[in-house]
Image (tube, rainbow, N blue to C red; front, side, top):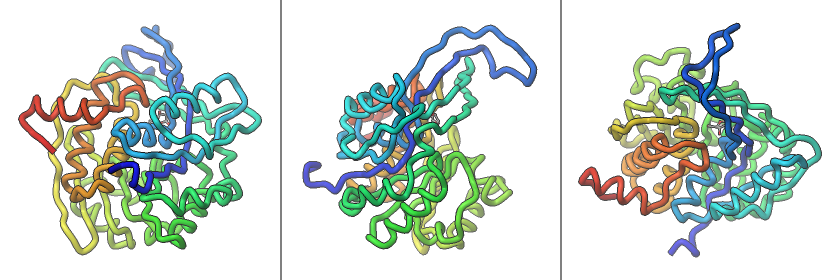
Length: 309
Ligand code: RIB
């Protein structure tokens, strides 16, 4: 069935995560002794691509790496997960890099240095317009230059391709964006950035929809997710209780799985429940792309809890 599916196309970032495990996130001016260090492929775009591909869905990635030691590893890791990397390019200079502090309680703090991601421009996107034209859905985040995001959204609007925009990390958006996005998926911090009021998810979602969005998913971590559709259904999706050891890329896992479930025909609320299950599994594993579950993982996880999807 999936050979005939229109692929998910991610126009996004790919980054080498430089993860320092530490008892806690250091305070300003503080030096502490860490417990381990690793480099592991990440980047919100690439993480979402891997999340969807690990679920067996066709995915193509449109993005760039640098001509450093990390570039080939980042491309290979995407390819190993089943992502079509044929549109990717290598540019001169460093790949995207992300120093990450990962605390013992699973919380994290991340700095993203864009590197090659900062060179993904409109000309490169236009070169791959046929890839976008053939997409079932385009997934974007905010780790590329804003002009590139705007251009990609304009292209998708002209071609009638639905877009899921993960506003991460939160940044000011052009007025046109709201009417161009099918799904807007902020976490709690990001939602507060856009509304300056993180208190009532139901009101936040309503206010975001009034800007012209067609669908909103508020990712609320351990509270689950709140889904609202313009002129349609709205409701909470319950979380799955797990012991989190690494929350890096849990939101990316949600987006990749949510896109797959929507394109497979699940209702938005059922798709969000599916995505909550996927991200619950991801936080029990270390690494960004390394933590993304397969369908078999998901079925086993749900069966353990007496659920099917
Ligand atoms: O969302 C998690 C990701 O944010 C990490 O993999 C890191 O690369 C940053 O982009």
